[in-house]
Length: 255
Image (tube, rainbow, N blue to C red; front, side):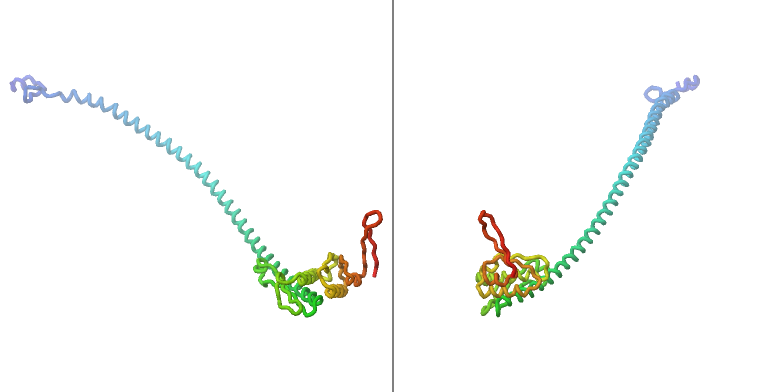
């Protein structure tokens, strides 16, 4: 049979089991026809991916430009705010330096004026009260002075130094009158009105007050008083009384 097959030139071959093998020349075109659509589909997908990548890249660049614009705007705003902050800090430092300078100047002026008032207080109290003395008590450091304030001490005749709160009623009145006179400089052009400041003083202290005021040349002082010691020392008297009509009337007498 093999020779007969070879004689007929049969292209098929006999395999064990009596079955003929497949003809490979017929199967090759079928496989090629199946691979072509797959390659085309892959190419389409590749082109689609490239298009999507290109679109994404374009969008990313647009986003990058927008982000860059926003960043530049924010950076400019930060720069402007930093410049404003630096200018405000510089102005604050200048204000603090000016405040320190004004505070120091205020301390010097207040201390100088307190020293003047203290000198006039001691002279006035000694003039009103023989063998007596009074003074202001305060700190010489401005910060401490403005925090603690000023207190008054006095030494009445034949007594020890005491704070104002520890004095008797008559002694307090004497110190108060002396302080009022010390606070008003005799060189001041404005008049000063004293309303019955001598009410708590005895005759001797009232006479000393009248003599002291007579020595203050140039001082314009008006005393409301019923004490003859002050009335006798006045350069001008003004009296008020109720007239017949019931209204107040005044009469003045020059010394």
